[in-house]
Image (cartoon, rainbow, N blue to C red; front, side):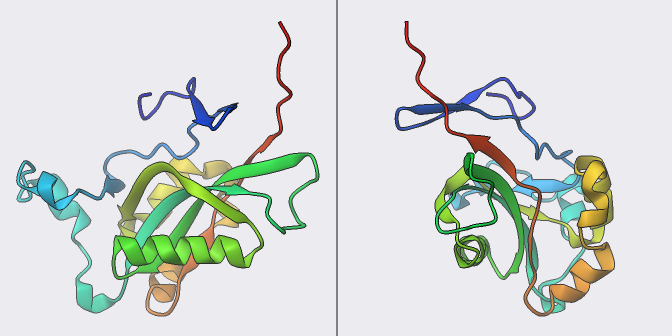
Length: 176
């Protein structure tokens, strides 16, 4: 399924659900992390890459986006007819593994069960492009997101923000 294709389905065991890609990001705002073996095939000196390196490590943690697939778990805020959701989690961490652990710990602390990283990717975002990212991807929910200045400030401490949920209901099997 292409990154912008909303016609695909995701298989989870015998249950199949339709998924719409809510988190399509323009390439200038986000860069998926590369495995070490892939780095030798990437031109790290290109102008595009330098755009992502505006923040030095001394300024604090990096900003990551991870889309998690969660189940109801013990959470009581999710409406009764829903059994799970896909949710973007934005976290400040010193690396992608720490970001994943932090994101999962946050959804579990809210009573959700962690199922998987929905798209299998952890994305590093430029915190200095946060406002542009929110307006490009989440313009309908922009007032629900923290401002860029708050994100940059919170990265110095312990930033975690859970974005809008894309929930789904249980599907009954079709009979032929």
